[in-house]
Image (cartoon, rainbow, N blue to C red):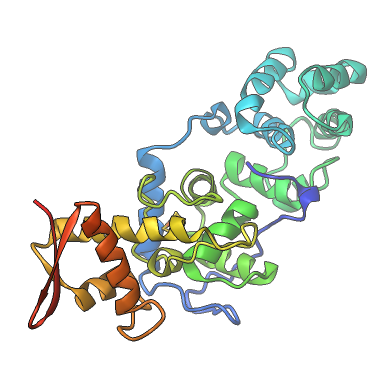
Length: 326
Ligand code: SF4
């Protein structure tokens, strides 16, 4: 579920299924791709937002949810979706409806452009007249339905038939950009998204990665709070640079400092004490004692935490040793 076909987002490209196809300009994905996949699917299956369309595999119901969510907040779509299906529970019922009633429903529920209601009505008619009342299962055929672009066709193929490609919407792009340092380029996003998706598992995978982008890796990432399953591989988490294609500004200096303060405290909770450089190397991959984010930067954070009474820093002969204040 995401933004519309008209917004320029596209379904993922076809993968050749190879683990070795590289994306030009993109860094290598983690070697253990299965571990990356399993971690995300396990995280999703343990807990996720319970939208009612996630409990159905009916292509008509899923198409309605996709069209409605193109311009409307998901929380608001829930009531409209349920009301719509009460009124027109099947594609056949919708095809038989008076178009004016469908458009009126759309306006009454503030669902955005009325054309979408007309197209949905028309698409239901096509399913009845051209497909004998049975939805096609292939993305190419689904995109022949009125108002159904490649993004929506792929979403319906994935969620109804487990037969789609990797979804690439703005949420997914943001996740891939941050986690695997994928360049801001549609082809690169599509290739990486396809490489990551486990073959034949578009239903759970697309739900899971979109959930990650929706609840953990939003514009303001909630890496630790949301228990992001990709922290150990994530480029942004390791470097503290959480910019993304749709989040162009650097997060505030203070925001980024907070992240690292949290990391220091967590790490010291696992160790009795740590030498300053050892700590630095554990909290960011680009730590270099004499570099921009080196000893001086780290000492500033440590001193702040010391002033706040959270940790202790001892300047001994062998260097600075840091520990939690107990
Ligand atoms: S660790 Fe944070 S930045 Fe990285 S993918 Fe997870 S939520 Fe996004």
